[in-house]
View 1 (spheres, rainbow, N blue to C red):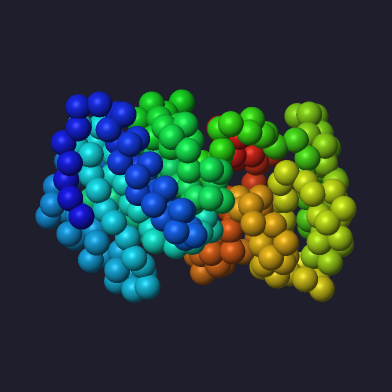
View 2: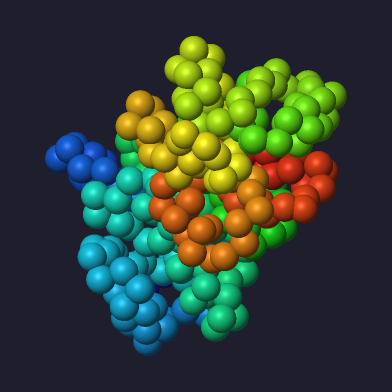
Length: 268
């Protein structure tokens, strides 16, 4: 755990490439969280490490702050994307509570997020040092070389009116949308269609939303395919959904403009 002074962003790219490549070559997953922060020092990093270890005792991580670029890097040993995403929520709480967060937090895990190439890692760093939008949101990094965007969506809800409303509005936005009335039907359609995104309620018969996400994780190593749209408001429900790899969590009642904005964020 150290504070490094840098003259160029390229130095940060190279250091990150060395960390991540070493882990992946040895067959391990490597979680990465980058956060734009100001005024961090060794004392703050020590406090952050203690806080994170209390919240997640099983966590094995390295904390590096690049003072020149004002980027905090958290490297997580053998941490997959869903677990890295959940850890970023805890990190964000600490940074915001102490008024250190100055920009976005970007989350990745290699090789899930793509090959740990110098190009991908430079894109990862650039998404923090030169963000497209001025925000303090958590963003999931995807392989920039694939050019993949969300085009097909599966909406899962027991409420037929709700499903039709969401489907019609999203179709007007140009998405190809299908529906499922329960978790079992959703899993069947997922296997047949392989949609880019699933929007699901948690309260579902046969297979609930949690079980649906768990089954998807077993069939597909790509995370970030699910937006939870639910009437469950407790933080415990949200935490469990993120632990299972949900990309976002929206509670009802909701606006369709908010939903479409959240979907577009996944493409950013």
